[in-house]
Length: 476
Image (cartoon, rainbow, N blue to C red):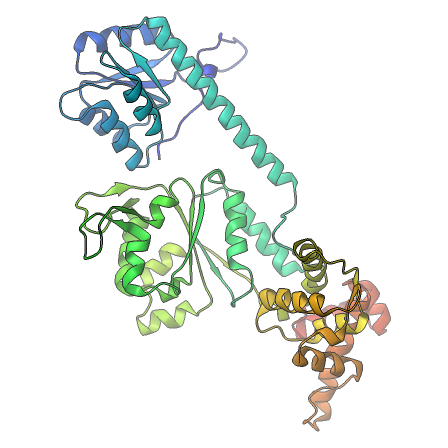
């Protein structure tokens, strides 16, 4: 996607001797009449533009592929490819340069068609040169305001905490910090972690803080779509490409144009399709099934998996070259059982959200229920925690979540906490001591709201000793 520089409004404002000279806005004039090219070039140069000329739409496409322009001013009626077709080719190639069309044969229908296909405005010939300059000034002002809105929204997001991801543990805070740092770049990101840890939420966080936040975030689960259908879902197809293809279909890549494409469960993708994904990432081009020409695309790809890609590469089910292309930045989300200090704020968040969603008025959770949640291993991670809380809130007889509202396995974990017991079948004193130590540390952290200094005092051990034991038991 070509870079659009400072707006024309800024370029053609009165010069300020105290500032560095601004770059002149570059405009490409496309017309098959040499006299019109010469006249517009002279006029626009005098009005503070840097004009270039193309005598045909094809020549314009060649120039745009090698050089970036701030504006394109194109005639509609030209031999071969006309101005509207030029506009379509630009947009299909992922080029969003602002286009203004002009024609002596203009009609309202043609003007509406051009604007519907992405033109900024339409000028009817014959026109006064002042009209062209005024239209360009208006276009520049619109672009300036759009950029200002994008910048203000970005500043607002940077000042506000994430409304989607709840992070209290240092491990998750560090991951969020890294995610927000890489969000501003176009680099691919590979997100790994067990099912239910929040990989898509992290991908959305990266998108929302990126320059592409005004574009679409489109996600697809590569493991949920049959392999023989996944290619057409990703790239689309043209009419007649295969039996049943009775019309053109846009693929996921085109739907995400200008935004972010999230490929979840990337390890489930067939190796033959992995080759095509790799080519798209390398060339920035896609090709619909049954189509001979390639289309330019501007999409940032984020991928995720809960599988071990190292093992998949060893067996040949996942390509090494695609792995290294996706794994520019690697973010691994630890399972919830390894960051239990995130459980209390997550409970608070989900209770508040589910109260609004279901019209409930749950006010608090009993100490026994808290202890059970902290003692449980959460193989389903955050998603399982949310489902358990929703069940408990529905079954709650009053305004409190109690141990009785939990499934049997979580209630059993709570019983072990109350009884300070470990595995009921073991008679190993050493193992039982470890289990007891873990349970007591969990209870102390829960009772102190995650405050480690207070928990160390409650446990009557030193703060460094507590930190060491927290790490040993995987309670970070």
